[in-house]
Length: 264
Image (cartoon, rainbow, N blue to C red; front, side, top):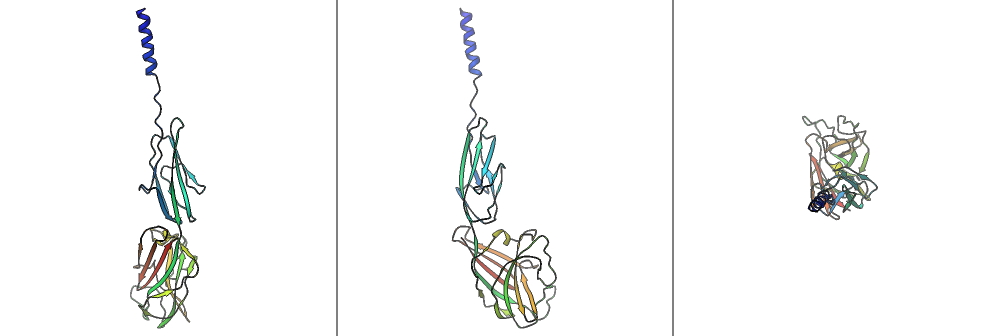
């Protein structure tokens, strides 16, 4: 009788030891560029890395809200159209349980609102170590031109780039003196949308904006300077990518061009 009781006790203990511990439920979370936030603002065609912070998951999947999905742990987010999107991350555990989290992304257009030529300068005699070709007249019409550089774009002497599509050409400021320091506001017609990443000069010029100040007279068209000239400077000033906020971009070398944008 004692043997039977002991045997039953051992069987009970063995069954207890063999009970399977339930897998922990998956937890889904992620950050924008490593920063914890419930939402993120971007400009069109800008990029943002997403960092997965899921726990107890064997797989994960992203839905970017624009018809694109991914299974990468650290995908790069980008949108080519403005609007409000919802990014959803779903984590799946070992037993098939799922956990999802969603965050909002607002994608804004960067709209050119104001264009100012702060200074226009050219010399009637060549400058040492400067190979741009300038007008030989005291006065000329000046305007700003923005082109999108390609991997195959070339830079002939003089500064004019013939094989880069023009994305914006301003109205002409007529009859400008060759050393004008009074700012000239140039009208921006319609709604001109530019892309913030293409204003940043990187290690390669492909898909970068070439911002040039051009002059023309009866003899031809000349490049006074561009943001790609050696020695040219550029600066950004913004109160953040948020609807209604502004960004000012300036570039200069002897002359200076300033563009003021609003995020819409």
